[in-house]
Length: 244
Image 1: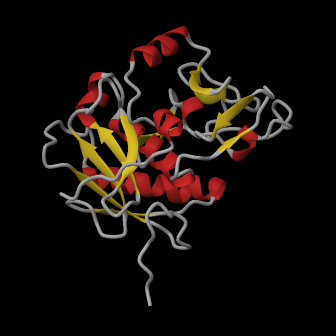
Image 2: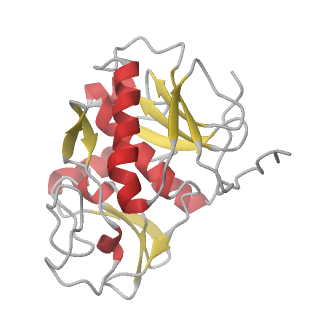
């Protein structure tokens, strides 16, 4: 007998199926065919994410939400200013990643990189509540595995996918250069933020974004973060999508 998944209980002891679809209101091309993008995302998960983080998934093409499945939906515009992609919940109360196609492209970014970034972080931390201690004993660091290296990408099936950090990145006892800290091997020490990246931190009773790049700092300040993972951490609430 199959037990119906419980609302917001994401660890069901099974490999999640993730429905991937383009919203009916989306008119801007993704920059790559959906079939090819799904195949690349599947290879990204199976060949790169699983060996490091152990979070498998089965991605399937669909025309909308699938009962008891997670989701990645490609929408035309961000429903908040300048947001590229952020998580919510499906109508069944399961994780969803929203990727805003026109907003992403207008910002000079690639849809495939935004989609892979969101997919990976959704797989590792679907409830957006994982965090850890780090180099500053007065600071808590969010488990966001693509943010610190989000300006970097590599090709999978010829399609750019987001760089990501390894578990050792969050292990403050690791010595610089002692192990691999990210897929592209550009990070040299725990909790390092590369140019164009950032970290979500909790310090002095509030959440904020930490970056070492002035341009990135200005971009984060300008961006409306409503609905982003950083804002979800502040509220501790995940809101369901409506049935289509």
